[in-house]
Image 1 (cartoon, rainbow, N blue to C red):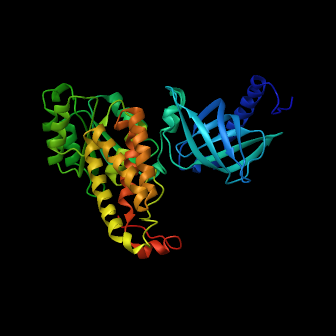
Image 2: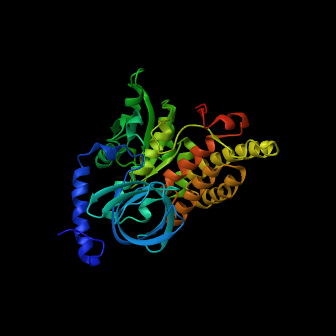
Image 3: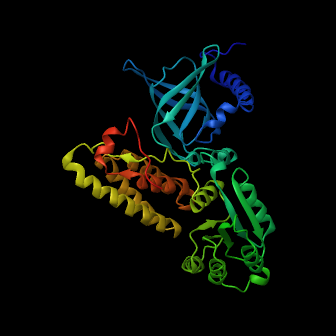
Amino acid sequence: MAITPNQPIQERDQQLQSLLDRLDAKDAVDDGRRDRRSARATFRRSGVRITVHHPGGSSTERSVLTRDLSAGGLSFIHGGYLHIDTRCDVELGRYVGGKDSVRGIVQRCDHIAGHWHTVGVKFDRRIFPKLYLDPEHADSAELDVRNPQSICGRVLLLDDSELDRRLMQHHLRRTRVELTGVATLADAVEAIAGQSADNPFKLAIVDLNLAGEDASLAPGEVVSRIVNAAVPKVAACSAETDAGKLKEARDAGVCGVLNKPYDTERLLTCIATWLGSAGLSIDSKEAIFSTMAAQPEMKELISEFVQKARDEADRLRTAAEAEDLATCRAIAVGLRGGGSGFGFAAVSDAASELVTGLDSTMSVSDSAVALQRLQEVCGRLSADAEQSEDANEQPRAIAA
């Protein structure tokens, strides 16, 4: 039986669900969907409210069946054609309660059967998919890395748990990281001493709660031994919440802490950052210029804001490593309020995304991608008015 927009909702949605099943099966063998910058997760929701702002000036509200969701967009089934570049507002219901309205623009509208089209909407600002996904599908949206294959380097993992070493390897399976796992401090020191000069360890990750022969060692002592063995960067991994032990590890030289249980999104973001990889989910490495740069009277103010934003990014990095949620939020709120005022809307957008994430999760570690994004945006700001005038024709990348 043909599916029509005027069918009873329950009957119609059942048939549309079957149609989506067939589309998903087709996409499973279609490489085209794998090129997206943001991973998409299944988001089958009936009755999602969409307000469509048509090119002629009118607006209509629709209740639609959604298909999938990512940090950058949403797709849904619509009983008619929507013009490309049509503006729309999507009402997303949070998994734990509450709703958010997200504005976007139609990027594609493909006919699938009868009156029905699948519509792809790109959001004006990135969201946190985990806020809206049920736990069953949340993990499929967490890999928010543009190119995991760009994360590479030799990494040493000191963890007495074989299962945890294997789990780390599982999380890194899509990268080109060469992971060497050892169970004791003595084995770690031996591995570092025997490393190849052509392929040395770039990072060591040390568990702060070692058992067995290393159980009597304080976290700071373990970290210091690895630092003294001349590994460029040393990080910690732990389920530890004792502020004193974490501070001891940081004072001994760790560049950050990976919380257990591991979250793929945070783990890949942190390791990519520590290894200096280029696979993080950011829009580009090109400089960001102020839209007010051509105004002579704004030159000094813009220059001062650029320096302030970079300083705040450094403060944000320190606060994030200390898991200081209040300071991270205060910095983000300040940048959100200042960015657009100086012609840097990208700063306000990234800061707003971080504030939303921190308020929703009440966790610094769960907001790792948004933290990284804001730091990256601040690092790309440029006060150069001359380049700004030519930016649309020939953008220039900032120095690494």
